[in-house]
Length: 280
Image 1 (tube, helix red, strand yellow):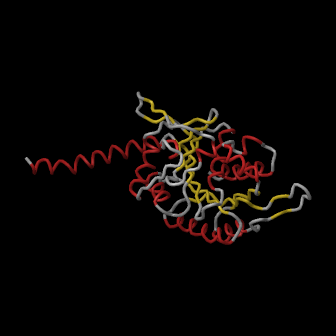
Image 2 (tube, one colour):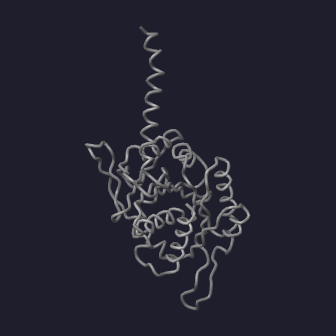
Image 3 (cartoon, rainbow, N blue to C red):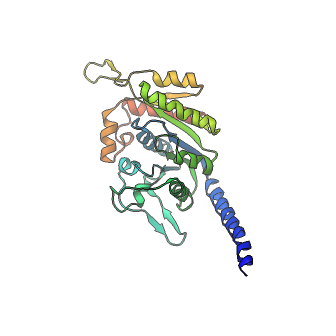
């Protein structure tokens, strides 16, 4: 009897694995484009780029999902002004993503935590499992875009996306200064090593015009993103000027793209979005 039980166990595991794989393929099959917004360096404004990019696409009429896969330091919920836990559809047995307008659905680790300042102390397998659950246990429906905001670096989270969502394409974010560019080159080489298509490089916090004298100010230098893109053989999607309102609006939960569609940052992001759309 014991031998019979043991002989069946591997089959059960394989059946569950195959069932999970088919479920994943079915869900991902309803999503046309999967974009991983990533960077080798923290503090480059990657999450604000991901959030505002998602809103630009949604405003254009695309059905968009925004998924924060930064398990330890999720910030999308704060940027988007989301509060509370996600609801669950009892009939479908799926979590309902938060909605933002008519075309944008959002899921963040923060939406599963009862306390805002709760620390998530997980090892790699637990993080990978949660990211997979974000896809398989959330009612995404049919999407034109799934924007995935990754934590800095080339660790468990982007690796899980590569393994789980193999047709993902990367949008790499950097700032112009050398210390950020050194790390972003690692992200680019990571994508090349795992054969992940790179849509291009976005330079964030670039030069901006002084509101008083109209002279250009380059707090974090200038041109580093474009130069790095050329040297690494990838597309340069554009430079987003530094704008204090991006910081303020993120803290207030009202993304800058929803407040002012005429400022230089918004115009630059629209141009970056156009570059992305033209190269899909």
